Image (cartoon, rainbow, N blue to C red; front, side, top):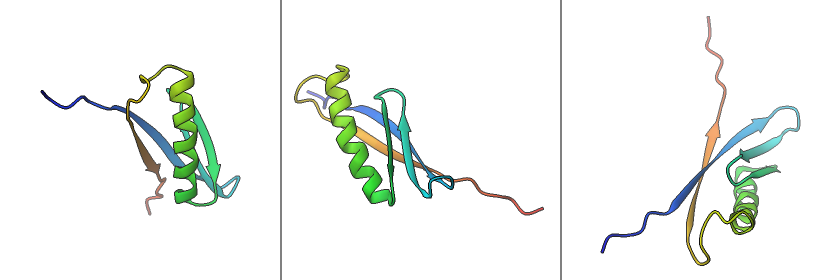
Amino acid sequence: MGAVAKKVFEVRAYWSTEGNDWCAVNDELPVAAEAPTLDALFMEVKAQAAEMVELNGLAAAGEEIELRLIETVGVHVAA
């Protein structure tokens, strides 16, 4: 038998110059988090995601999900 595909959630992470911290958002779960480092942000996102998946019935009990933290960076191109 083949392996069961995991439900994948992509969470967008970006640096907020307004708050001087990392932010993460995903509307599907939903999660929204802020933290001073990417590592701390991922830990917060994992905690929120586990709770939101259960509350919103997005996965069966005992099912494993996959989180992908996608770092979004703006780059200015020199003229």
